[in-house]
Length: 105
Image: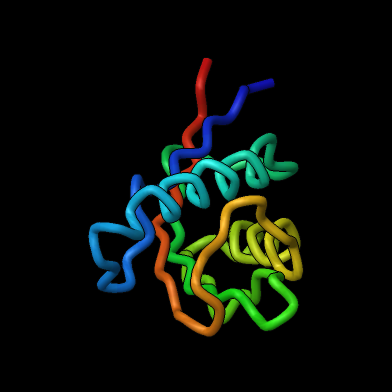
């Protein structure tokens, strides 16, 4: 069995001012933790682009997940949609996040 590593882009992109950089970096770390230990198999590196926002209840809303692998799309949606983060992102703002799953071992 292969271990998996989830690499999430170092910043969420949404034309954030520099003052928001710490907030987005904290959110990226939390999202990476939520995506750890995928329950599907894949070959090589498998990438996805995730567009999300935070709703008025403070929950992540997954707007879209774009990947060549349908299992990745479903996994990301299931692991992130309606989850609350400890870090605060601006409500109603769209963020785009690159995600890469890599096999290790």
